[in-house]
Image (tube, rainbow, N blue to C red):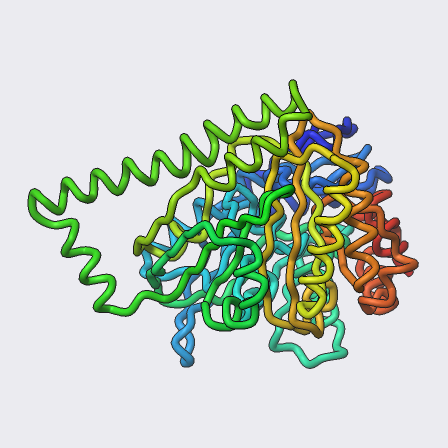
Length: 453
């Protein structure tokens, strides 16, 4: 087995792909009785060893689809979805029902269980990560019992404690069988993509972040250029105007041209040409500064209207390793300046841009945005190129300003220093109750969360 980014490989003793919840429960109970540890994996998009096991490896791909749809009095809808459902499939299923996730990350290959369990998030200063959209879980515990927990349970009760660790806890409370998500009526976004000077972004950062529903930017190391992305809810008039442009013969021509432009930007420039850039960087690291200067100016401006999930999601065909840190929002400018200084002094060849996103504070126990507005800074390196020196330097910068590592992306932090950021004693207590024999632990969860108690 190996992760998508090829950062971790392992060989489990046994691999099972259950067809239903009963099969999942039976597989967990059998492995537990044999003394095997159990870990589940969705799409393998974590770069860390979160899914590694020498015991039973569970493939959840066959546990897909929507189980129930329950409209709520507040206008939202609670949708219960099987844990192995890929986000790409969920987006299509919701669209047919006239529904959508209120926010998403920029990749849709993950499973629902994997995405929420590792703290996947999108961008939007008034919005939280995917775990904040979870309203209930069904989780298979070590003896094969299926337990249900929801956010309606009173704080401090066993049900609520289980809910907190099961919705974002690296699978340490058990294996998710199904998740109930709060979704919203389908909506469209007006997307604006423009290359800007980095100084313009940073000098007007508060207006840039607060003035848009979903704001992010990509900065190309060694340059002072950024690609800005601003996505805002489109009103009925904007959607109607966009639709009108696609009707009739002239409209169909414009639509075809738009699709061709999207293909050019997303597949040829963002993936095809970018793949070539990275292969050149691998062969000639000294050319990276010039390559980044070209990349920073290659993508032109785009302005379009589309369904929300079509705007949120970006194809990622070039494999990479990634580390991401959640910083206090006020520390972003200084951290980027420190990182820029190190890159210039070291001459480290980095052909991938640095990605910056934003999120609201939340109250999820293990959320990287817990109790503070957050700026997420993700550093990437082309998979065949060395990444350790770059990531170590970035991690020192981010840790110095109180950064928290993404649970599914590369880092070197441990429970000893992460205890200042999270209620790890409470997490260990809950794990000790639901998994006293440590069936769902592995070396990575012990490192970052400590052992159950």
